[in-house]
Length: 287
Image 1 (cartoon, rainbow, N blue to C red):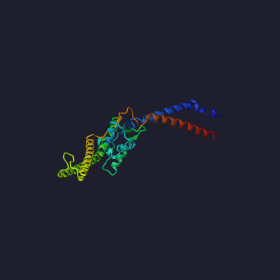
Image 2 (cartoon, rainbow, N blue to C red; image 1 turned 120 degrees about the vertical axis):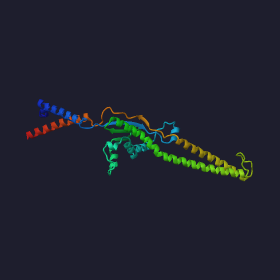
Image 3 (tube, rainbow, N blue to C red; image 1 turned 120 degrees about the horizontal axis):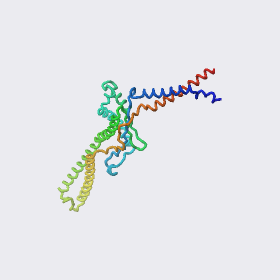
Image 4 (cartoon, one colour; image 1 turned 45 degrees about the horizontal axis):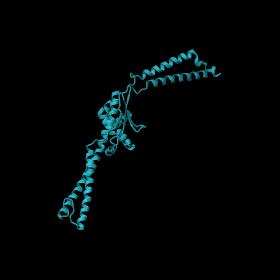
């Protein structure tokens, strides 16, 4: 009984119009999603690993350390920062390309939102970071993705340089302070003839106490000097750069619009609609 009721689905006339309409729907969507009507967008992606930030940790691990989860999250925040967006605008003149007037109220916010729509920065399941850019020019998409990676390292180094300099100056101040104290103590011991070539020849108790104090100050001075020298040399070494394991390259084809997917969807929607309409029409005739 059901087979007889649905036999009209396989009639030549119905199948003919169904096929014509499905093909027409497919071709129309394929045409209207072409570059003649919709500007295609291209996607490029760079994959990086975030390095250890501390030079001492890099030194301990022979320069091949990967960053922790906290360092990865911090690096992603840098890549998503407004400093990054401003730098990208300066490099690629994005405000002009997007036709956004920055002098208007809310213009800067509009620019930021537009750039963020075309950029995706995410942590992957393998603890790497994906930097993906969508643009209407395939070369520009690849250049922007690689530029974001490069600018991220520059912004991080610039941000941390002030703290590194502060630590260096503090270590230098502590070293100079202890050096003055040791010089003053040496003068005191020399004046009392208690110290000769770094050795105490007097045997009275105050002299031994002075020598013990002097030797402890020398040890502390050496520790502070080592700390100061380590910080001074670390300033001469730039922060570790991101490990680029997959630089962005120009895409072979557009990422948007997905023409084949949209065309197949239109074909399927037409077939389903045609069947439903025919079912409703026959149901009305029966009634």
